[in-house]
Amino acid sequence: MTGRPGPAAVSPAHRGLDGATARRRYVAVSFLFWFPIGMSVATGVLLFTERGMGLAAVAAFYAVHSLTASAAELPTGGLSDVLGRRPVLAVAGLLNLGAFSLIGLGAAGWAIALGMGLMGLARALSSGPAEAWYVDTVQAHAGPDADLRTGLARGSSATSAALALGTLLGGGLPWVLGLAPGLGEWLADATGGLVIPLSVPALLGALVEIVFVLYVVSSLPEPPRPRTTVRQVVGGVPAAIGAGLRLGARDILIRRVLLTASAAGAALAAVELLTPGRAAALMGTAESGALVFAGLACAGFLCSALGSQLAPLVARFAGGSERAVPASLGLTVLGLALLGMTAHTMSALATTVAVAGYGLVYLGLGAAGPNENDLLHRRVDASGRATALSVQSLSMQLVAAGAGLGAGALPPGPLPWLLAATAVLAGALLWVRRAVPAKPIPDAVPAKPIPDAVPAKPLPSAVPAKPFSSAVPRTDADMAAKPTPDAVPRTDVETPVNVQNPLC
Image (tube, rainbow, N blue to C red; front, side, top):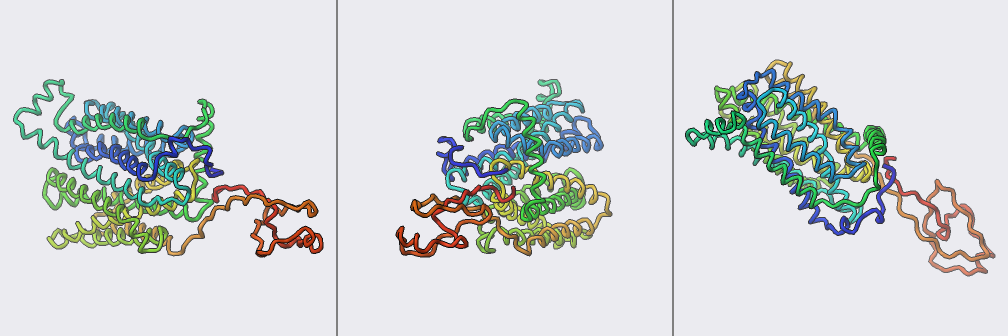
């Protein structure tokens, strides 16, 4: 990540995509990737238990997914920066295709575990390339100061909408199939027990992955990259990983983004772990509680989508992305506090307040995300953008895993919620003092003609040239009679300027 990509590195096809077209394609890719994952949210646990798996085995399946995603996060981010965004996204889609096929058809534990591992690897592969492609394309067309918040917000909204719609469809489709008498038995008999109503959403997700791969290959043009060998790829990925790990140490703003992602991971871990139990306790049975949780999760995703759409507006009112982040996180803190205060009661009023708090958690995180990433993309260049996003995702996942274990070990009640609220509050307080903006060094001004009588003295490389203030042209005689002091910077001397990313 040593330099900003120059115009010569951009292909005509890549430069030809305007911001609106790139934004539409980024939104479509985001929706197509997350829609099948949303369909698996409502039926995943029920499908595995229907296959005869115990709760311990189900927990192990999800652990395989999380550990695989965490272990592959940084290497796959570096792979995207070395090979390109499009091929890595296509591979992620193919892996998800295999994952949903194994999950939908697999009756053995090893098949389900393999499917969950493939899904975790696909999750790691997809965590940065699509967003990096969008930013690369927009900046190639409109320059490094192009507006990014709008596209990032719409992409985040598309992700949340895909999860919400997928959750509703995945939870409702088996129920609809169950309305037809004997249809479930017919499916099982016709496929030797491989296909049951609960496995239909996963198989439908596999079909969506085919559409995703075809769209990525046909609609995401990239600038040509140098031809790479296997040895170059293997050698380039560790370098990209090392650069990603040094991001937080070199730039205070990126460090804040990473720590804020960690705080968001703690909040999401608490919500996803504790809310299903509260829903089951409210309804009295696990089955009805699962149905309520599916509806609540859909509402949360919609609140996240709304927050993402409001992110540019919040930034305008707050005075920039850096001030919008703590304002948005304040809503998340409030939501977690409301959930904590109502943890010991099931009254109608407390339930209403808890539902409102649940929505505020996702609304605040949805509004903060695009503003955080807007700041992140302005600190890194194309050579390390996907790696930076992978580091951010890794920060969230690792803290979420630890926070989930901690919340599960604590006694039920307000304490787990309030600890999560404290973590998010600490993340918001990081933004109270504004970071010094990293301004890129301006390009060198072309040299003016220098009279022969006066030899040009090169300036020290550490002193940037300043414009000469006099508006009166000087003749050769004037310059010979009154030479310019060395202490005064001159515009008729070309000072070499190395335009580099401020991080490196």
